[in-house]
Image (cartoon, rainbow, N blue to C red; front, side, top):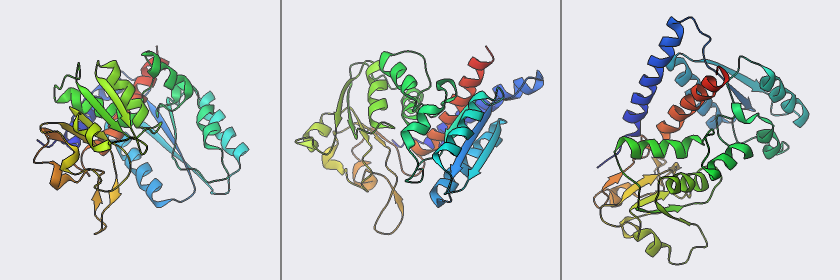
Length: 281
């Protein structure tokens, strides 16, 4: 069965739009997201436009700050500090990647945790590890919502996450653990990767290799969540999973495009709303 992230994200955005409509009717200040875009990377510009469109759709305020590729570390830090101090800004997002001369970690660490809607600040990461209430990275959060909407209970299930990035692999493993799954994080140095994957009730593919996982990696009836966004030999968008090979054996599977991707922006909007509610008490 195909899990449509497109449909589920549309439903979540509609729910959020209704909540923001209530704020408008009550004459309240609206949630505001500010995105910082450095340079003119084409992919980044597309992502930022999608985020802006998402804000516009649900009725949130948004602002894009476009900065030169040549901006200094100090100038970028001053921009973030100004947004930290602005009481009308609820969420701050720095679009990655940044130019090589900018220290990415220092920039992300400078955003106050309460406005860190990407969930990358060490304080939010610590809350995730400790099982406390904080802002959770958008893509992992989106995968949890997909499972929730399918009414899939992770309790006692075996989850294999292939990929150990700080943005997807590690946080999604922690979220699965919090939902009582038994979790294995596999990676490029894992021995017998195919055998490890074939144990999984839920296989999460997040390595950035086009069509790497074919049906020989997947147990019959498993849930397969594909985080990869790649181009195949025909320059068509594809995931880390060979969809045609795996779909007949999987119980549930996310397509690329239209699976996990649309959830990321929906969760970004929900995180901004969550940050807004906390700021407004």
